[in-house]
Amino acid sequence: FHQVINSLSTQSARHNPSPSQFMWLGICYLGVGDTGTAQDYLTTALFLETRPFYQGMIELWLGKVADVRGEHDVAREHYDRVMALPAAIYHQDEARELIKTPYSQ
Image 1 (tube, rainbow, N blue to C red):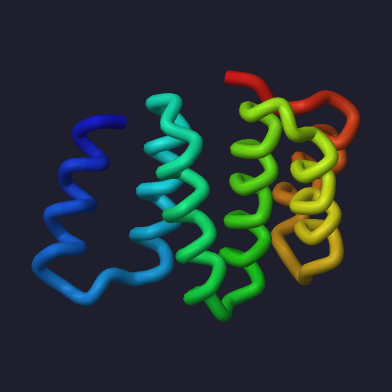
Image 2: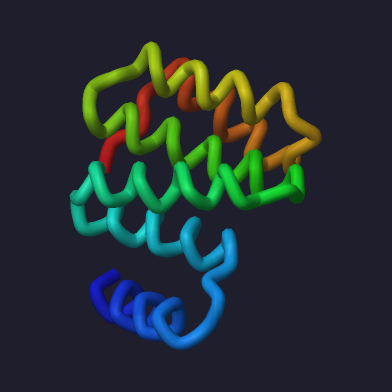
């Protein structure tokens, strides 16, 4: 995770960052246990993203961040949004499972 964070951070500093770069940085920060930074990057990605596939994926990961923090009610709101979007079926399936069994690392 740390190598990806360094690589994406370097690219973002040199170029205009894309929503997907923010998304992947958020996912990596969750992977190293930094839920605050993960949420910041994922929230920024969601704000910038216009494609439903990625919006669903970002909502899914925001739900995982909330679950890791012990905020399953907040996580459920994100998982419900995944299912409301025209997101990928496998993201919707994972969201349904995570409503029943909260995400943990």
